[in-house]
Amino acid sequence: MKSKLQQTLEKRSKVITAELMPPRGGSPIRSLKIAQLLKDKVHAVNITDGSRAVMRMCSLAMSKLLLENGIEPVMQISCRDRNKIALQSDILGANALGIRNILCITGDSVKAGDQHDAKAVHEFESVRLLEQIQAFNQGIDPTLGELSDKKTSIFAGAAADPSCKNKRSLENRMRKKKEAGAGFVQTQMVMERQNLIDFCEQISNPLEIPVIAGVFLLKSYKNALFINKYVPGANIPENILNRLKNAKNPLQEGIKIAAEQAHDFINIADGVHIMAVKAEHLIPDILEKADISLEY
Ligand SMILES: NC(=O)C1=CN([C@@H]2O[C@H](COP(=O)(O)OP(=O)(O)OC[C@H]3O[C@@H](n4cnc5c(N)ncnc54)[C@H](O)[C@@H]3O)[C@@H](O)[C@H]2O)C=CC1
Ligand SMILES: Nc1nc(=O)c2c([nH]1)NC[C@@H]1CN(c3ccc(C(=O)N[C@@H](CCC(=O)O)C(=O)O)cc3)CN21
Image (cartoon, rainbow, N blue to C red; front, side, top):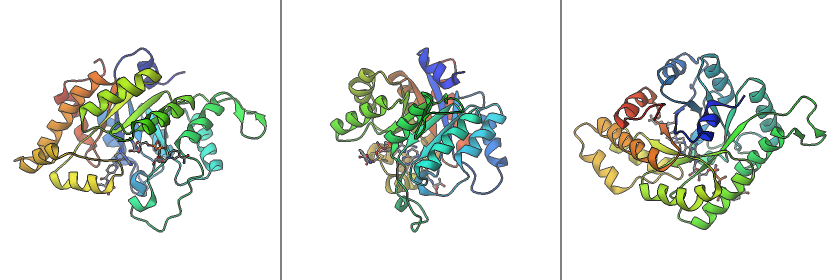
C-alpha cells in the first residue's frame, strides 16, 4: 500500500507536511501531544534524525509512535551517525514497522551541533542511501543476490537547497538523486521565491520530481540570526531580518512571513513543508493564515 504522501503527489494534488523534532528525553508524551495538533492538518509529519548534530530520540521510534497514533510519518535518515550495516537494518526495520516514507540526507557535520567530539561515520551519503533503498525495494540483497524475506516498499525522498549558487552542481546532484530512486524533494527553507521558481522550472520539472518547498518559522530577529549562523545552508536575507527587527510583535510577524511564503510557494511547487522548531503547535495557525488545507 502506497503512503498518503506518495498517493497525493502521484495524483498531482498539493501536499502539506510538517516537521517534528523528537524529544530530548525518554518520554514521547509531549511530542505526541504536539503531533495530535497536526494530525488532520497535514498529509504527513516529518521526524528529524539528529538534525544539526544535536541528540534527540531516534527517528525510527518516533515514526512508529506516530503510526500508532494514526499519523503518517516521514522518517528522516541521516548518514552521519551509522555505518552502512546499521543504515540497512534501520531501513528494513522501518519497512517492517509500516513506515512507508523515508527522507534521505547526508547529515550536518558534528561541528554544527553540541557534542563536537562525537565520531561522524559518513560511510554513505544521501545518494548511496537512496540507492540502497531502491535496491531493497527491488528485493536485492547487498551480498546474497536476493533478499530472503521479501522486498521493501519505501517511498524515498531527497533534500535540496534551491538557493545553491552552483546551479550545475545542484542539477547534477538532483539528477543523481532521481536516478537513485528519489520520488520527491524536500527543500531547504526557501527565502527567495525566485530561487524556488528557477529550481522547479529548470531542474525538478524536467527531471519529473515533485518538490515540497521548505517554509521555516522565524520566531524573532535573534532567532533568525541564530539560524543564519548555525543551520548549514540557511541564508535569511536583509528584508526578512528587517521585518523581524522592526516588528512590534516579532513572533506574530514571523508567523505572517511563514504564512505568506506557504500561500505563495504551494502554487510554485507541489506542496509545502512547514518547520517550526520548538513551536510546532503554531503550525496550524500558519496554515490557517496561509489559507491552505489538505484539500487545497
Ligand atoms: N560524498 C559524495 O559522494 C558527495 C558529496 N557531496 C557534498 O556533500 C554535501 C552534502 O550533499 P547532499 O548529499 O546533496 O546533501 P543532502 O542531500 O543531505 O542535502 C541537500 C541540501 O539540503 C539542505 N538540507 C539538509 N538537511 C535538510 C533537511 N532536513 N530538510 C531540508 N533541507 C535540508 C542542505 O542545504 C543541503 O545542502 C554537499 O556539500 C555536497 O557538495 C557532493 C557530491 C558527492
Ligand atoms: N543543514 C540543515 N540541517 C538541518 O537539520 C535542517 C536544515 N538544514 N534545514 C531544514 C531543517 C531546519 N532544521 C533546524 C533548524 C533550526 C534548529 C534549531 O534552531 N535548533 C535549536 C533550537 C532553537 C530554539 O530554541 O528555537 C536547538 O538548540 O536544537 C534545528 C533544526 C532542521 N533542518
